[in-house]
Length: 117
Length: 105
Image (tube, rainbow over all chains, first blue to last red; front, side, top):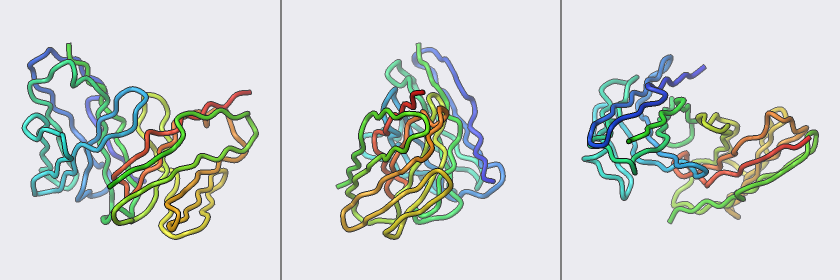
């Protein structure tokens, strides 16, 4: 199988603090990982594509200085929400793929529910 | 540009067949993916089409017409546990809003 572990599954933080979310591919190497945000009853919105050893590619409208992505190894990518505000409260999901070129299924983490108070 | 459309909600009866449609517009095409997502959980992979035609996997089938920019997911012998959102994704990068399917007894 292909398992992606995401941690933490939920987090509550105060406004102005930073939160780090980890995404690990447990049994395969993932050269590419993706980060999404999902608001209630809405679809997945791709935030950024994370490539091991290089800078992440952010989608239009996503602030790279606010959502810091680090892909330090072939099995780990992290998303740090800096200076979080209540409007950042959302469900954040990562995914990884074994292959490239958009032809391989995505394997999703279980998501992180972030609540900023 | 990129655009994916699918119905927002559908209701079907246990044991029946339901078809969830998806139309897409993309620049470049590497495949059309369907995922199932239960409330509060991450999506799980259901099927993938890159060539025209029907792909069958047990109770689930998916169809693709590249010339029409159209796909559908067919669910047979519906079970209550099939109640979930079904996401259509083009190139694994752009997703529709998801179709919330409710299966009723």
